[in-house]
Length: 87
Image (cartoon, rainbow, N blue to C red; front, side, top):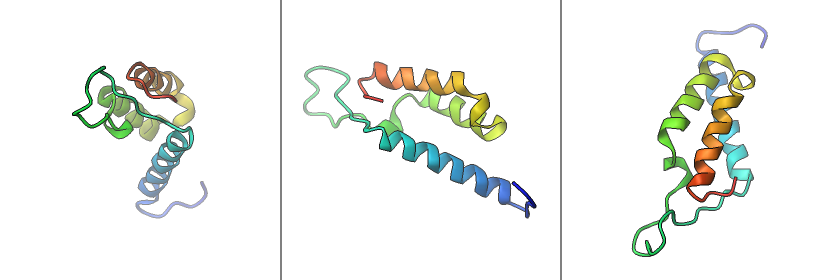
């Protein structure tokens, strides 16, 4: 990363998270209602789905780097798929 000024790690981490979220968006994530007949309810948004796996994934990426968190990334993807998201 080169010379790092105070706070640059936070900036780098935020950029990494934005890149990950862009990748998820670019993967044509399409939400479908998780429960049949839930027409009155708004569909679940990808940002609100699987908060437990999302938090674990994000924490790991921040602390260890994306390349060291593939198991948590895949677990989050599986959770999203289980809720009907195409990712």
